[in-house]
Image 1 (cartoon, chains in turn red, purple):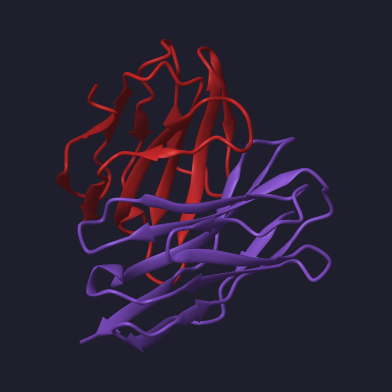
Image 2 (cartoon, rainbow over the protein chains, first blue to last red; image 1 turned 135 degrees about the horizontal axis):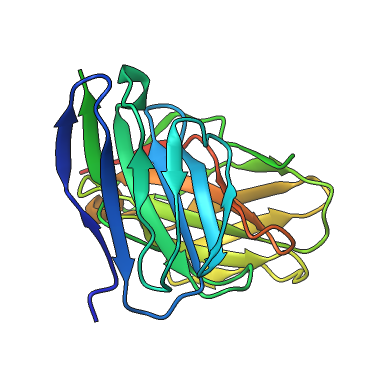
Length: 113
Length: 114
């Protein structure tokens, strides 16, 4: 049982490049989400999904796309990277239900130059 | 919109002493949950404690306890007998039973001094 896995752990992009951050979970969780963490701002919700085929926007969705074709995977796509997207990105998953514990991946540190 | 506010960016405490981290939130909903997460230097997010809004009794987990004041929309975390391993950033978080969105505060960096 690997929990929530994220790849890559580190990435450097040039402005305008695109890339996909991968997230996978093996706990059969319905709910998956992406956050970015910036100094002094806590974790901010980018996109989330309550099940395969269903996604919705969080607090800061601009510049990011997601899809959920399977229960296990929830990739985050940066369409055209900007320096403002330099951040640490976390993927999380949980069972549906507000009180369920969210399990977090180890994070991806992304730098856009 | 729901918001979570942690007004103490940094705090420090001597080993073995008690420290309280503050958190306030704003919501018009009645059904929600509150959490405290710990993020050590390893960056891993670890659930510390959880509180259901409909329960009046304050949650406790070993050395960690909360003071949940629903009317005041306050949710503080008390760490007793602080240990060096408690050094971390602590995040207060709110989740609505309706939306399922987890909203975090800005975080409080806690340093436990020997």
